[in-house]
Length: 112
Image 1 (tube, rainbow, N blue to C red):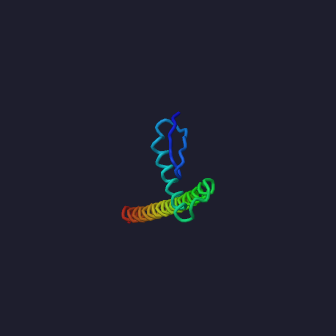
Image 2: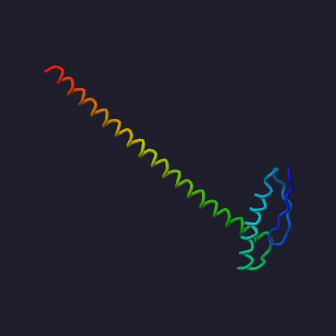
Image 3: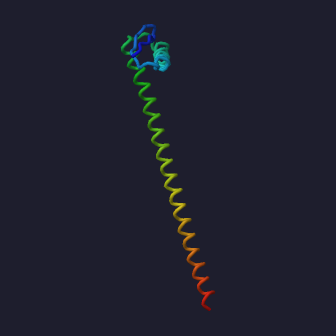
């Protein structure tokens, strides 16, 4: 278990994390700090808890939008796969029908 120091809104925080996750935690903290910085620029220092809550809500909203977009894309992918499966089945059915007609013609040629 490792520990990483991050700064959000000018305040240092120590965060425990799994070994090797330090760069990721720093990157995420920088993102949170940037979001908090946007609020400070727009509405001022309205208290650490309020700023962190606003940042958390905006980030949660972004995550929700990303999850919805992912679900929509997965649904489109499943629909495309189903359409491809249907097309393959239709083609196979058509090929089977043609093969039956060829066999019927061949049988007539063998037995005039």
